[in-house]
Amino acid sequence: MKGLFIALLVILISGCSTHKSPLQSNDKFIFVTSDEEAVFQAAYDAMLEGRKESPIADINGPIRGYSLTRKWGLDYWTSMIRVFPAEGITNSGDVVRGYYPEVSGEGTLIIRGPSMDERIYEAALEKFEAVGTRVGVVKVERGDYLLERDAFRLHEKASLRDGGTIKIEGLDSLNSETSSIEDRLQELEDLRSKNLITEDEYKNARSQILEDI
Image 1 (cartoon, rainbow, N blue to C red):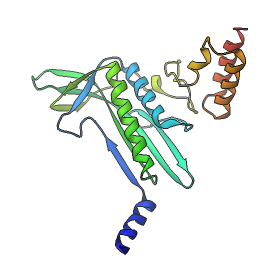
Image 2 (cartoon, one colour; image 1 turned 90 degrees about the vertical axis):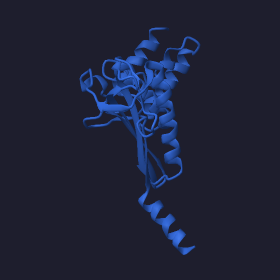
Image 3 (cartoon, rainbow, N blue to C red; image 1 turned 180 degrees about the vertical axis):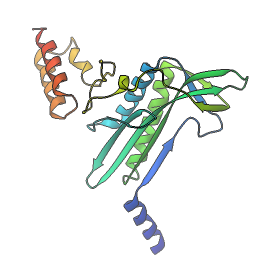
């Protein structure tokens, strides 16, 4: 009993980690598409499953993606989604090109953290399949990105992708025709107070709302 308690204590202190990928099982697959922009949008949207009020940031490194960190008291959990370009070989020997998501996490939230990563991963599979064709492969090799890295950069705070290609949950609703001007302005203020949009985005969105008066 004492040994079990010590083991649990070590886990709580040191934390744990997760790792999910379509290449982990015997039934490997990738999502065949050449629309890299849509794939990164899908990855970003999948991260919203775990975002709550946590800002989403870029992952620096050769494999591009996004990360977020959630905190409860002294505990934390960092989730990451990476988008891998890939070339796969099917059972029939055909070569297909596309992408696949990899979701990983680590931290001291040993129950909530892995559960959050599971939601992000399931959302990633669903959203990737909406923009690409799921194809089973027997072998996979690393491919190359089609677009420059800056096409998928976020601003310093969770925001629209440079060029306005990333659509953040919240800003889109500000354009709703069913919301009053007052409600839309209040929602915009809430987004800014939670640091979910940049100051420039706040000013631009506010101007657009006021144009409807």
